[in-house]
Amino acid sequence: MSSDLHMHTTYSDGRLTPEKLVAAAKEAHLNYIAITDHDTVDGIRHLYEQNIYPSKTINIIPGIEFSCEVDGHDVHILGYDFDIYNQDMADKVNEIAESRWARLSVMIKKINELGYDISEGDVLEIAGSSSSIGRLHVARALVNKKIFSTMHEVFDTLLEHGKPAYIPHYRIEPEEAVALIRRAGGKSVLAHPKLIKDDALVEKVLSLGFDGLEVFYPKHDATETAKYIRMAEKYGLMLTGGSDYHALSSRYPENLGEFTIEDKYAIPFFNPPESLE
Picture 1: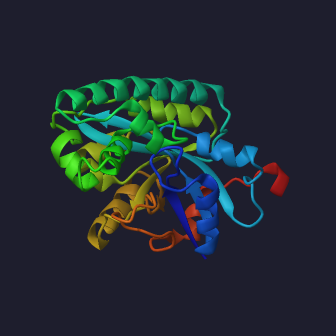
Picture 2 (picture 1 turned 90 degrees about the vertical axis):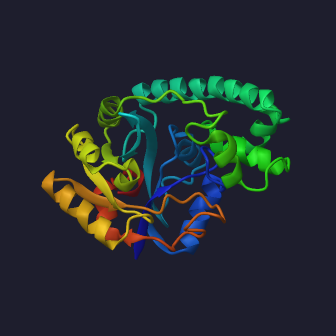
């Protein structure tokens, strides 16, 4: 059996609803999965309220991916196996969601000033149930209106760092993310260290008290994976990984099950709900 501890739903920037994501994971014969939407737990809450989580047919681990920044570098922090109704975390994700709404308004105004006809309504139609609205939704809306041909073109022209419509969003500090996850009873993992683009900074961040490191990741080659395994061992961290699945045809993996990890790396993050014990 195989597992995947990094995936996104329509409650952030993925293309599948939580229900469809769970169904796709079962179809791919995954044993353990974690839904790690950006800055929100609404997807896993939705599964709980629809009596899909917990499940007797697939092991679902509650997750989240906090977007942070350190010294100008994007730093993402995964949280696993926490209380999805923890009040401290709920307050913080609500604060982040509100900041994203404010950012969207500024971003749309910038894009309009640059001569592109797009409204908040166009973006919200694309975003659907997402409570974590971001640049990806704006890019999809611009492509949907045929203003740009591809999302890559949108980012290159408008939305990448340094481009005319890029607006930074509110990010919590890594220390706060780790503390929030711990107070909610969960485990914190530094996500995709290669994407931080500075291994010295990776080691600096790891000193904040993480439980694990995402060493298995689609953009890590064999040499990089081995390097991050050594780094995890140096700091006494659990090894984990996942596909960062968004169900995008332009992004590998296009299908669940194409990039997986061994179950042994997922088991330490799974705490069976009482109803299944």
